[in-house]
Length: 125
Image 1 (tube, one colour):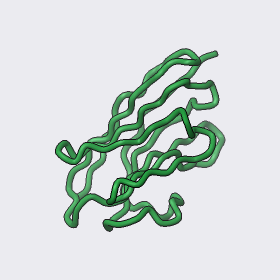
Image 2 (cartoon, one colour):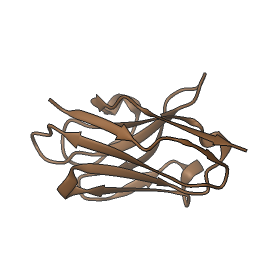
Image 3 (tube, helix red, strand yellow):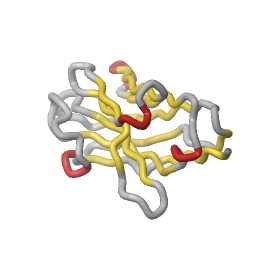
């Protein structure tokens, strides 16, 4: 059974930094594409950053140059380093994983089979 547990959310001021962590367990076939999504009140859940089985990363335009996704295979963890945070980054952040190894595909919400419970990030101006 795959489990994803996020941590690291907090309240920070604009311009600050946070590092989110996602501890993963239960992958049977190796490390799949994993991603971070976020959902602000009243908005759709959107993909933020992704890292595939091969270590290739991708980001939504609004976070490019500010956020970095990384992984630690030994710890079965994925991280999201968030710098120069803006109030519009305020959201619940979710870690997600696909079932199979390989690329991240279209990176849409429906492509991901497993989800964590979320960790809240609040950025004040």
